[in-house]
Every structure is written in structure tokens, then in C-alpha cells.
Length: 86
Image (cartoon, rainbow, N blue to C red; front, top):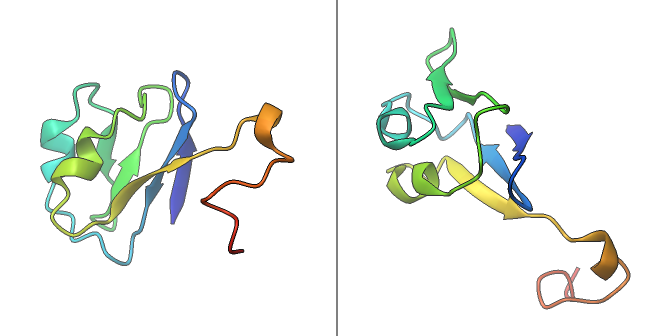
């Protein structure tokens, strides 16, 4: 899996290469042209271009792309609904 930090967002783009078929739909819809297929035909992201807008996640038919929200340092010690059960 590849995780890439976005500059303008508090999210990370996660790519599950086991689920990616290399169809290129994410590339076609990415408004920043931040995605490409690697030499194995799997999606990869150019971190300098990605803003974690979520368009690729929305259109991926295999659910191989997902945005993961990062906890802010201000809330790092607080219990949230997301991590309460962990």
C-alpha cells in the first residue's frame, strides 16, 4: 500500500495495490493529474500534485483508493469516535 501526504489537506491518499486492477479511471478523473500507472500497472500518486480532493476515491470501481483523515496534533490526546474502540 502507498500512503501519500497531501499539502492542502489533513488527509492521506491510501492506495491498496492488491485491489487495484490498473483500469486508469482514477487517472482520468484526477483534476490535478496526480496519478499514474507504475511498471506493474498499478496506480501510484505524485505527492507534490495530490491535494487529497477525493475524486479518485469516488470513481475507483475497486475501492483501491481511499482517503485517511489524519488526527490533528491539537486532538492527539483526545478520544474520538474513530479510535475509541481501538
